[in-house]
Image (cartoon, rainbow, N blue to C red; front, side, top):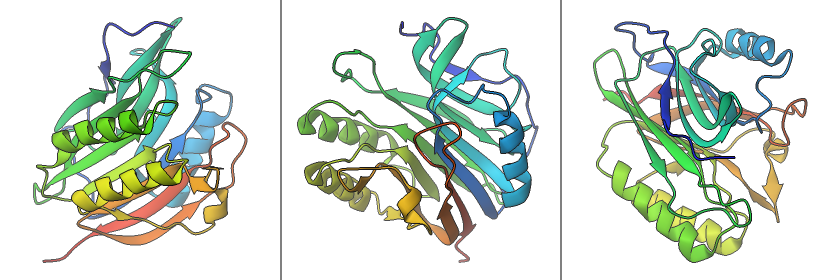
Length: 247
C-alpha cells in the first residue's frame, strides 16, 4: 500500500450547469472497498431510483480514473491508499457538477498500517446559486484523543468560513465518550445538528457509540433512515432527505 501521487481524482463525465435541487436525498456508506463487487452497481442504481438520490457519499471506496460514473453521476474522489490498478478513499458523486473540490489529509497516521485518513470538501450550487458544502469524512481511528482533537481542529479551520447550507457525513470513529465530547464540541462550534435516523440500531457501533453520522446546517431534515444491508460491508448505509430553509 502506497500513498498515491495524485490524491484528488474527478471522473470525466460532466453535467454542465446542473444544480442540486432544493429538496434532495443522499446516501452515506462506508463500503469497505467492496464497491466493485458483482451486483453493487445494480444495487446503487436501484436505490437511486427508489430513494430519488441526488448525492452519494462513500468511504473506503475503490475507484480509478478509468471507472464509469457512479449510478450515472460524476464523482470526485480523494485517495489515501494506492492499490494495484486502483485507489481507495472517500468519494462524493452527485447529480450536479461540483463548483470546487479540495481534500484534507490527516497528519496523523493510523497505528500499525501507517496510512492517513482523508476528508473531501465539495461545493455545489442550488438553483439560486447559493453554495452548498458537502464534507465527506473518514476520521482518524487508532490514534490518541489529542490527535483526534487536533485533526478535527484542522478541519474546522478549513470549513468554518462557509455560511450556507452544509452536510458533514461519514465515519467519525467516535468510539469513546471522550472522543464523542470532542466531536460534539466541534459540531457546536460550526452550528451543525446531528441528524437522528430511523432504525438507528442498524448504524455500526463500537463500545455503544455510533461511528457513522450525518450533521447538517441550514437544512431541514425531512427523513433519515439506516438500512440493514450486510451484503458488502460491516457498516450499514444511511439514506436521508433534506430541504432548504425558506427565508
